[in-house]
Image (cartoon, rainbow, N blue to C red; front, side, top):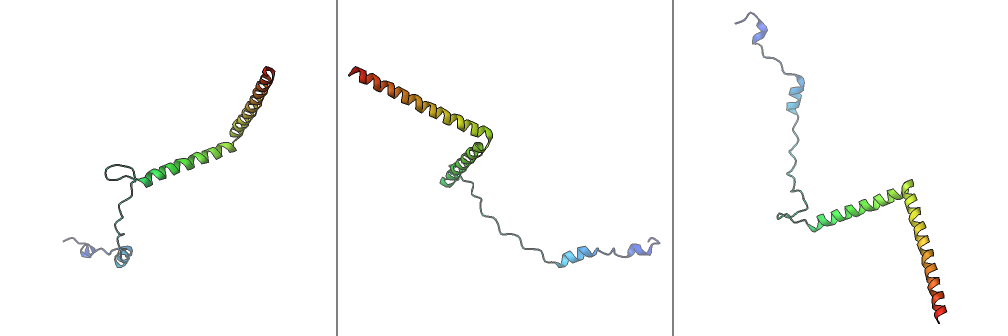
Length: 107
């Protein structure tokens, strides 16, 4: 044996390791239920998944429209559209008046 008297003594364990051994471990969580993938086992989308996709797309489209209307470019496009609508309505009224005057002349 070696001349070192401490070589035969067991190494003391750190206090943390002994305190962890005394604490109870939390129980394992219950097994999770099968996640709803939105598809049947045959690979067909479920009604719920289709409805959710449609509602998500609709909400995204509405949100994008609202955001676009708040930007200067969006307001400019909206103003241009309204101006074209007014011009079209005025032109339609001119055409109707000219058609009425043509009808009156032919009678």
